Length: 311
Image 1 (cartoon, rainbow, N blue to C red):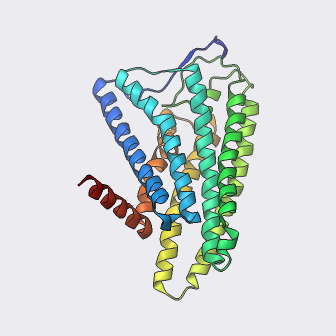
Image 2 (image 1 turned 45 degrees about the horizontal axis):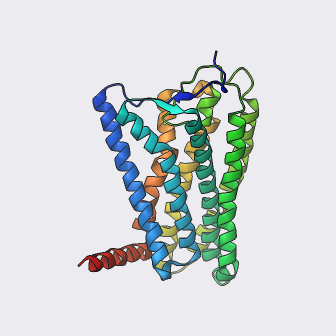
Image 3 (image 1 turned 90 degrees about the vertical axis):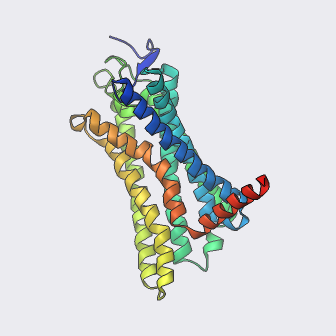
């Protein structure tokens, strides 16, 4: 029997037992991590340096890239280091930090995706009033609300999770500290408060998801009234990638946190965690850059400027 107050470390899930597979995992995750840093870093730099991208849409995209860097930096580097050094250990405080930042970045990102859906709705359905609705002050307030709500939820969930007595050992069946996996280590019914808080959070997130879907229904209805094919293409190219990101993000995170324990298996939990914690930060820059001419032009100019500076 071990109590959470006497624990000084947790043991994370090892991706593989053989050294060759551990090194393969190290290289794969390192590649994904560096790609995510590079892609999101380029978006942040392009938006910051190109004054033509100082618009609400790109301001929110810059915030999304910052959250993506934070999110993937919370989970992947520790997993990479553990594979390299052939260990599974994470300190108690390290686990607390992971829980806090995972919840913070993921819920802040979800709130921001909701704001981005509203921004696209205002741009396409209310074009004449767009600059009034999405003025700089409103944009800053919306972004601050997204970051602030993530911080508040992270504080609540972290405090709640680590107030629970843990008496089922210290082995976390995941490659990072995740609330559902820690709840499996709790004593009897002591996890019910945190489980209840997860359900309340999920309900609020579901309301956001309904808002996003309704926003896109309005957008698609407005787009279909546009006579020009170019107008259709521009609107759909902005909205469909965003909808794809939201759908992947919502479905996998809901599955991770709301599925019953009887439906749980190590392989399924691992795949779901990778899909909501690792894939979106790496894929977001590709989706937003490949489908966005203005951003591609800004990145091209940025590369040319750097090249001319070095010549």
